[in-house]
Image (cartoon, rainbow, N blue to C red):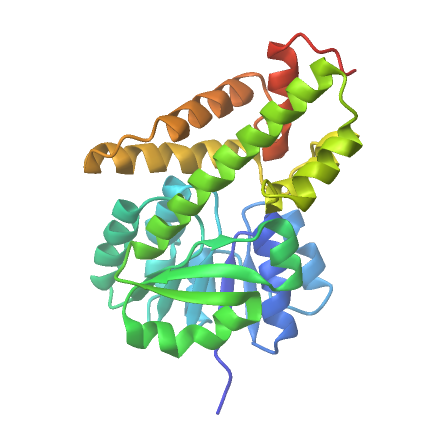
Length: 296
């Protein structure tokens, strides 16, 4: 039986690593990215590079898009030379970017008009998980479509969760991002207070990483923060976007989330300071500034 032909659109930090793992798993692959230079590592491996999302769709059984936000998804799918213009029987579109349950339902409904199946399948695990193929993937949509493309997910992730109906994948991701954001806030607050109080940061790290406060944020990001490494594994602007969708969703459901609202406002401030392209751990820089700490 021939392997599923996969197309991947969006070769950023996450998408490029995910595409490489699909290639390593032996799936026939074609890629597309607006910035052509990001396709060069794939071209060097002999992987076809498409000239448009339409071409990706024409040459694929499954089209994955991993772009920044819902307007980018809409442009890739429905814009000039978009995926829908390359529609053919059996085509499946998988949105692995993060937006909202409402957008997932909108995309699913509009794609259905072209006879295209849709899954929302955002991921968590950061750039490390993307490179190592150990992502957690949360999938919403028809069960039979999920089962059909599950081997493709298994090339990118270690934990594959079927979440139920369209939109449930995005809902799980937003819940995850709430914890990610508030956890980063907590680590940044602890580090700022420790700095001002003259506490040795290595000792703080030992306490946090070996006790009840331990988390992925402590283990992976705190050492970077201690070294002043704010380069992105996941960009601050992207977390701001995710938290915005979480707040929009909670407003519709009348669930008070003051911690999430506060975290969003802090990331708004970080982006306003021109640090949106830095990693989420750059929140520490904002806390140091607020506390009058000169760490230059």
